[in-house]
Image 1 (cartoon, rainbow, N blue to C red):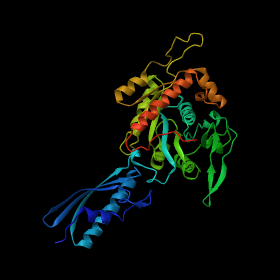
Image 2 (cartoon, one colour; image 1 turned 90 degrees about the vertical axis):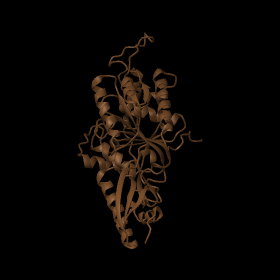
Image 3 (tube, helix red, strand yellow; image 1 turned 45 degrees about the vertical axis):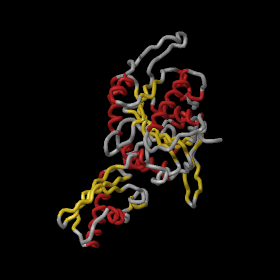
Length: 372
């Protein structure tokens, strides 16, 4: 009587291809045979497969492909096989440069999100990007805030236009560079005063092209400035882009925190499964220039910090409400460049903490400054 082994099952599964990665699930080490048991003349097999696309429909197609492979094996071996197939999302921390097609030259992709608008998410994104460049890293930034793209202003490239680049016989979008950061924004493709009125699918498709049709080259970090809230664009990006983690920004006030909680819970959903690297409390306090020892907590005190402690989420730090940060953003020269200032010190401390948390994530590429 024929014997069914894990080796035979894996050989059969070698014909199942992961659609995004273009390789079979066995060579990618995405398939695991949990159990092979015989009951009289029937074999029971339990298999777990990881899918790089977290969407339910994609996982269902993967399940069907694995079940078909097992039916084919049963016919070839003259066996009766009852297969139990579990398909789970491939966690972002399990993706490597070798197991993804989108942004293959980027070591870490970090999204910056907020539950609501107006809390300084774009300011935080821009300053983290510049701080990483100051430390010797190669950095890219995608402004995915469709309806309020602000990065062209914050990097003083409002009138710049990305230029086409020929690479490998294909015409790609060449990112604009400012302060050492490679930058692409929907704002580059519209008049500064023009409203961008797109439905979800159109916005998602346009944003996707900023990742798949651009010449990003080799980067240590890519930051994504997400739109506020939790919506279709967020889901599309999570499915397309291999996120290493997300940073959530909020002010201390209760109404902003309520929305920030929703943002955190969205990324923790099983179908999304993106590590939350931490929370940033922006506009935490105001210190008058003539009273440097005084702090006024205009929007409440330690709200984000308390939520981080209660939820077990890392707290990355607080940024003060100072005029210099606003002026630096409007002038296109992020505050992180102003060494020795209160704002620059706070940004550096926040970035330190983010890198520490990222380094502690399992299966990460080591973080090291780019050699000159």
